[in-house]
Amino acid sequence: MTGLYTHGSSPLGELKDWEKQALEKFFAKMSDKEKPFPCIPATIGFSMNQLRYGFVGNPKRETTINELASLLTSYSKHSREIGKYTSLIIFYETTESMKDVPVKEYEQIFWEHLSGLTALDETEWPEDIPQDPHNPIWEFCFNGEKYFMYCATPAHKNRKSRHFDVMMLAITPRWVLQEFNKSQEYAQRIKAQVRKRLANYDTISIHPDLNTYGAEDNFEWRQYFLRDDDSSLSKCPYHRVLKFLGFDK
Image (cartoon, rainbow, N blue to C red; front, side):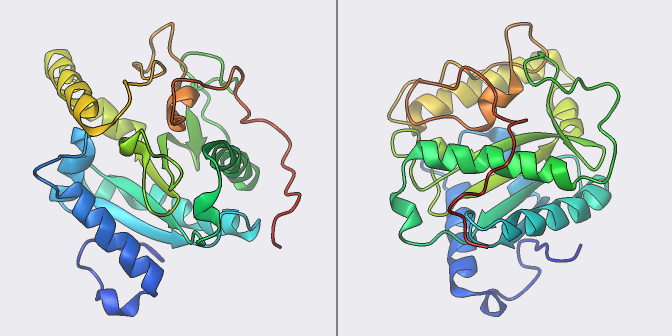
């Protein structure tokens, strides 16, 4: 998988300084036993070395979306060979000045990147997934694969579960989540543990948008990017026309 790394697959010395630092901090976050990361499937995937890592440029550059599309295309072609707890972790080259921008600016960038990915997608949207994000069974799709998207940023302070030193995406195939949830009793038990961990991890209450895929009152897009308070967008901006005003070319 061109451009993708595994834990220990390449000497950290071969990476740029910011890439090395991002990986080291991510590894520390996922292996913390005293304050375990809330997402249990992610920690299992990490412990089994089934996560894959990629690096892209400044999130404000339009060309960065092309880099993201290339990595996700490569991952989607090989993800089923990796293991049932796999996810793709993407780290953005986030400048020091960008680390001071507000959460809502990162939110805008995130949705522009998702819309940009769709614009570059050469595969037809899956027939069983509606294209309207306000449909309860909508979810993001790319290269024919269905994905749950997670975004973390330096701007998140209260919601530590959504904080990272650089802008970061965790992209998980739907089939991974289906495998994890195939036993309803087991899934409910894990969900309760995740919520308990969240309560201990964050300095703010669990976001009201966290819900279960397929539930009539659930919209997946609301969970992709959680704000640092309990507010949320009233309408999904996913299909908005891209305008890279002020972006570096």
